[in-house]
Image 1 (tube, one colour):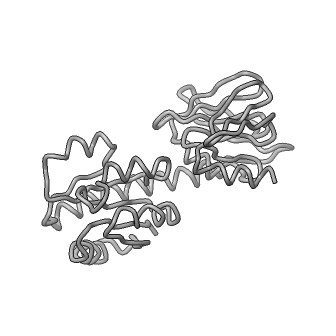
Image 2: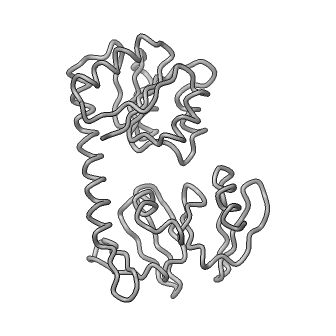
Length: 244
């Protein structure tokens, strides 16, 4: 099932959109709704929806400020649903997957969501495929698809991963770097949680290479090779629990 979250300041609009999704897309499961951005933030963080429908004008903060406050918790697929067509350019600057104007045309909704579901399913298939390539032969290795072909990397050799949009760079303990055309969230699911931790929207770190932690708003991790990595405020408590 694909998890979707609906955010609109009018209950009527939520009901209409919910009805359309139920009718045309039984594979979409509604994991939450909200009529206020402040109420939506903790729900989105907790539920981690695959798809977020959001109105632009909301009480308190608008959709763009909402996305800013969500930081690394922004869902991978965003559809703006609004009565104002002039915000389309700004929406796509925020990597919107679709832009629907009210009242929502059913045919346009079906076209938009169908393309999104195809992308989501492709990503899920890729995760399953790459998970199958994580194998044990004395040590666990991760198969990384590069421009030149597949590189098999021992998990213990990974110092940390750094995100750059749709790309992830693996930094290895031998000094080598490997650039992969995959978002870092893919590898957050693949790497074992007992050894690797997402400390920031840009970084996953191998816990065995942590040398020290410097206090701060989020703080800073220092690895054995001297590399300093920032810890986001949202991730700090999880990291401190690991230390305890």
